[in-house]
Length: 237
Image (tube, rainbow, N blue to C red; front, top):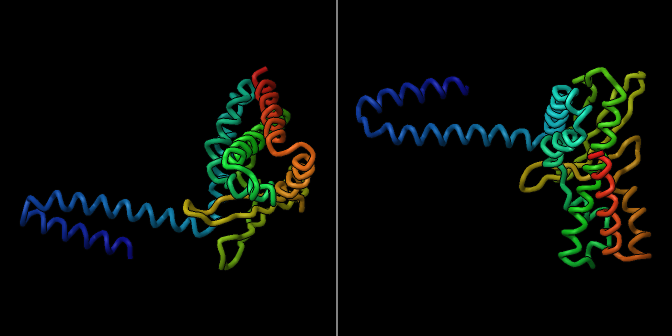
């Protein structure tokens, strides 16, 4: 169907151009519009299928890590850069922060919300990059492109979906990892991950609730920022 339309479009373009040279500008604009439409339709198709999106993110991340394996051994900051480029754009830190703070989000000021989102984002970036760097440095083999298997979530009838996956470890043990995803204006994004039933959001929510009750949200943000700074210093050493 797509090839038939393309042939018809090319034939029509040849006839019209020969008949009136001024039509070339119109045809150029039409061609550009069709290209943009095709790209948007392809992007929309991925957005409507969170499983496909997760597979794409995983493949891109594994490829980037394997290609930069030797550099990562001496440049710890490179792992962070790869995570920021391939993974972080697909995480909904606003909704994740809302879930972590719970009722405290409603009473927080705009400045506190922005401060917590930034601190929480940096915390996850530092944590994952440290864990990933440590793993890569202790394993010489390249990451298997088929390391993760994402299961079909079935028919999606809402803006929230759980995509289940299985990570195949070298020991043969399969580790279940679930991704909670939400559909927004910029497509599907991850806002929580559960590893063997343990939710990242729930874990931090339980821990932070006590800290906020005892010391307040501002002090929690300062504590997270201080921890992030220590991790950054450790990466440079």
